[in-house]
Image 1 (tube, rainbow, N blue to C red):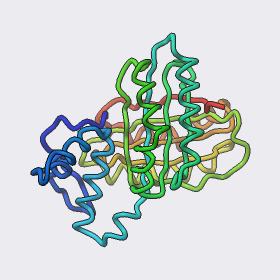
Image 2: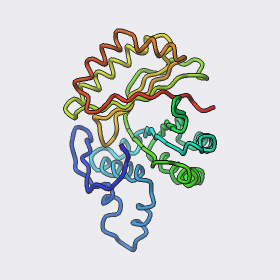
Image 3: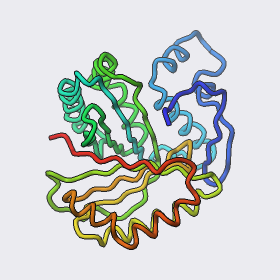
Length: 271
């Protein structure tokens, strides 16, 4: 799911209510006092406009302090030209190092796909929307986006969430860890069932040898789409997990719910 704003409206599920909302109109609506707000909104990345729209709408439904204090989780998929793998990795590392120093950042890891090295993933966690918005306007972020545009073969695929499920990370040595990012897409009617199944899977997986973490991120504007983030000490421990009885039972129960192919990709973390 690429977070674009080409469609006239979206249905967002907020606090068990389904609300039709046009994120762009919430931001740029009828112009008052000139075109500054319109121009600013159109310059923002699509994901920022979505986060702003959700924040504005949520603030009208719940306690403003709660709405403003929700963490923001983001998974971004990046593909660069095959002849730009080294320069792309260097660019991403510099972006990571600068972003980690910013106020409100709780996590920013850059991963490289093991079998297709020109494909990367960025894992971000921000304390709240304010921290995320400040990051998005930072000079280092703008420079990163400008330079990435020169070498990417497709637009960034950004997936945002305000919720996270799973068991706490066990800790231990992270160098050499294997990461697995899986996109789970189920039919809308199975949203709750799938989340319960994934939550059970996180408990079972946390007991597997070599597991460091198992976290589930439901997408903000498609709550029946999930990104599962697994961390393993070695490739062998992950392979053993795939053969475990509880993993095979999970896949069997999930299959009737699936709306698209179960997509799992392996990554290493950039040093």
